Length: 132
Image 1: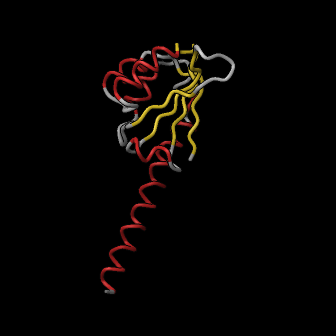
Image 2 (image 1 turned 30 degrees about the vertical axis):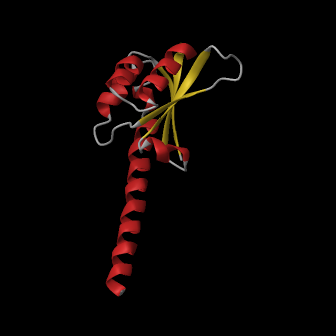
């Protein structure tokens, strides 16, 4: 019984370190955002070698229903992205048509696939925020 409790404790401890490592890793991109602002999102994706985006969520804009000014990228399964997860939020230099983001969201069910990588890769970054 003690061994089972020890194994469970170690697993939970390791998972919390993994989340902290992910947050610290992504925070480095926020700290170095001057290297990415004004550049295509593909540069950031190419530099992000230790972790891959799994879910993408266009952020609704309440000023206009026709454009998205920012997009949230999560690094967990889509189902888990509704909970307290680490998010990389990208504000775009030029707003993206909501119809375009909706198309990809419905096509791939909010998963970040090569199609999304190609679509967002050419978009220019205005700002980067990482939060939990």
